[in-house]
Amino acid sequence: MTELVRFGVSLENQLLQRFDARLKEKQYTNRSEAIRDLIREDLVKKEWQENKEVTGAITLIYNHQKRQLLNRLMDVQHDYHDNILSTQHIHLDDYNCLEIIAVKGRPRQIEELYGKLKSAKGVKHGCFAASTTGRRVI
Ligand code: NI
Image (cartoon, rainbow, N blue to C red; front, side):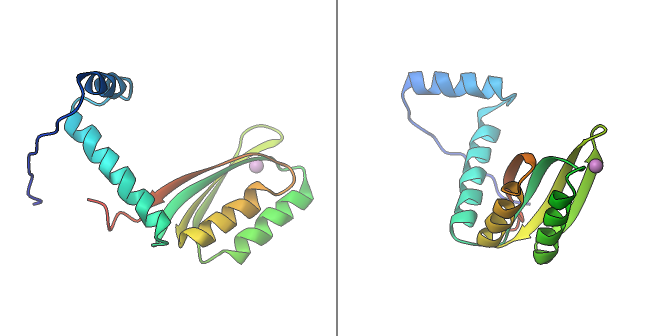
């Protein structure tokens, strides 16, 4: 089991009050877990900056009736098959599709893949959640 250490932090009262208010909004029940998450977020950001192997999820919303768009999205995904772990396609209604693409690899390649998918003509919305393989984050 990982050893836990305690440490003291000095900061302005007003800053702590604001921090506590944010914790409440974000549903944290104690400061320790919130501080751990801030540290983890910073470590994940560093993995992206240092071009380590990372993971993430690409979300796209598009109209499946645009056949050229479907071909384009498929071509791009085949070009990056080494980076794609899985693709989930959900038919939202008669026209709109939600696609969630789980990705893994080097940040440059993941960003390139996301850029090509999001910028495809006819994609209504795209967003990306950057994450980690979990190996360098405790
Ligand atoms: Ni669909």
